[in-house]
Image (tube, rainbow, N blue to C red; front, side, top):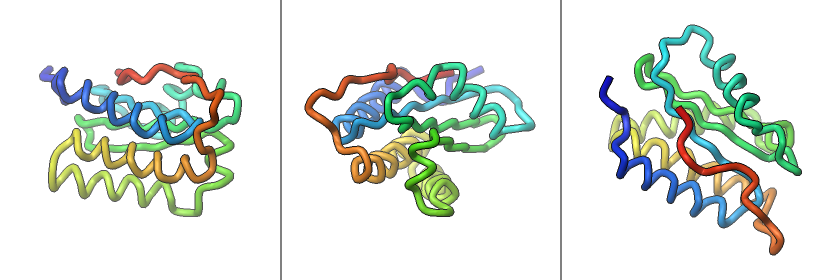
Length: 141
C-alpha cells in the first residue's frame, strides 16, 4: 500500500509537533493508521494507552489519529486536557482538519490539528524552564 505521507512530509509533521511543543509542556502525538477499523475511538484510546500517553506528569497528552483508508480522524486527550477544553472542542478540531484535508491535503490537515492543539495547550500548560519532552515526536503507525 502506498504511504499516505512521504518521508519528507513526515519530517515536516514532526517539525510541526516540535514547534508546538516548544510552546507548551503538554505532549502531542500523531498516528496514521492504515487499518480497516469499525470502532475508531476504541482504536485511538487503545493506541493512546499502548504508547504510554497517560504517563505524562500533568496528564496533558493528546493523540491525533488519522485513518486515511476509512476517511476518519479521531483526537483523544488525557484527563487534564479533557478537564480544560470546552464542549465540542474535539469535534471542531476534527472539522477544521477535514476542511484542510479537502483544501490542501493530508499534511496541512495534520499540521492544522497540531497547530490548534498547540494554541490551546500553550494557554493551559505554558512551557516551563525545566520542561522535558516526555514522549517521542515521531509519527506512530
